[in-house]
Figure 1 (tube, rainbow, N blue to C red):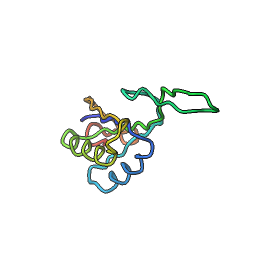
Figure 2: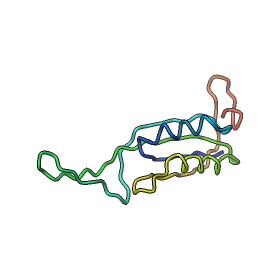
Figure 3: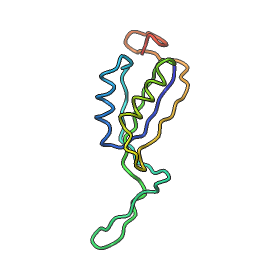
Figure 4: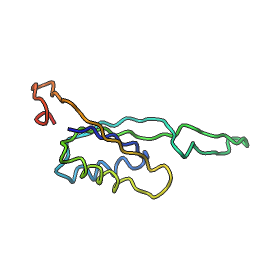
Length: 113
């Protein structure tokens, strides 16, 4: 099993949810609002005539745990749904998961997904 974490543009969340609902790989996801910056280093804007550099940008973090064989399909799904071609599209990371336990039924491993 793998954990997929994706930091994406806030406005792309609905696109990911729609794409996920149309696939057989839908095991659910957790979504958090986050702040951060990457190579973009924020953006500058004028506020009351003053130049203000905002270094932390609002993004959305999606987390999901999937079977090993579903990882590439999920990565492709997220990339397709979030790609704008502009700086700030986000990042996807994949980490190994040792175990998952469904609290209600005590199912473990892939059965808990």
